[in-house]
Image (cartoon, rainbow, N blue to C red; front, side, top):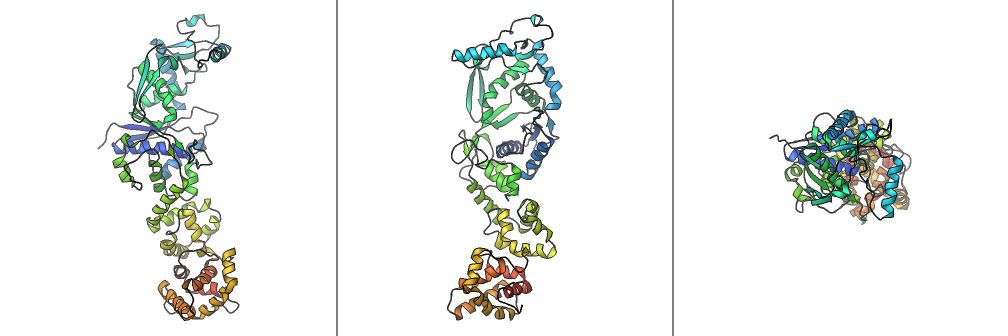
Length: 477
């Protein structure tokens, strides 16, 4: 059932959708969906020098990949500048704001004096009650809000609780610059009001803005939306999250082989909890999500936990779905282009056949692709160091003994191949691994792979025998 709940995600298009922004978008999306409402998307593109269309596209692509759909068309904040100017001028007309013609030099002197007296820098209100006609000829002033001089502004935050801002600390801040462009404070308030936003969910680095924005709402006679300032994400060491911790864009996690549902599940647990539940479906997130589960403390990003969670989702994913996701990221994976070039009906079928074994040991799609490289390897296979050592240390003699037994196998399947190798090991009083390891090395070029008998079944009779023959001298299968 639809409700009037409206949230918004408002990124600045100066880069990709970073992990903190993705978490903010997720919380807004979940709250809106949990209440049958809508999440709107606003692109805060007023910084014309740094805002790019490529960044806008990257943000939209990142949200779409994560499965966070927004309602309606994205709104450009820059395009709404005339509306912002009109509201600033309306506040002047209502006596709730005024033109200030203080020069840059005067402002510098105010700041220097405040520092010398040990006070925080504040505008001293010198144009608060002066007539604009006193301004120098041709001067273009700014518009400042006429803030209360005493008392306090109170924000009832759904996460942080009651937050009090002494009005003397808020000062008469600028709403409209002298070139006619709005400040962030004004633009956000006007946009949120015009978009009908009922709930503002954002990082607690914006908490200091909440007091000033509340003043603007009240000056305009508008209802203040419900505010919820969520904790920031820190690295495992407790420091502010940075690239060294994994503060990358959504597109990077996609290229690293993370599933969107795993990343959603991981992000929702950064600053919010539902009891001890760690793994939850999107439907459960929507059903359970609310402010009561949010923490005031900073969340800690742990890439190892994300990998483990992603591994869980991979193990439980549908094989066809994994194949589609795997193919999707091949262009971003080292050597992926060569694999993509060899994809056809046969190799796709082999990948699907190998998937149950591959996904048991993979934490990411990249690891899944790495495990599947044996399917696309060209003969003669290149051996890694450990595989070469296994073959050099008596492995080729074992292969020479096994090859005729496998050639005689009528029923080519993993269980049948395992019976032949197991019987050979028992007759020669060796462990199964001593026979299986040379097979793995010869068939994959590695010492580690999916179960070797599954590898033989996936490769098929002819390719398996040919690869084994490559390592046992001339003659072929």
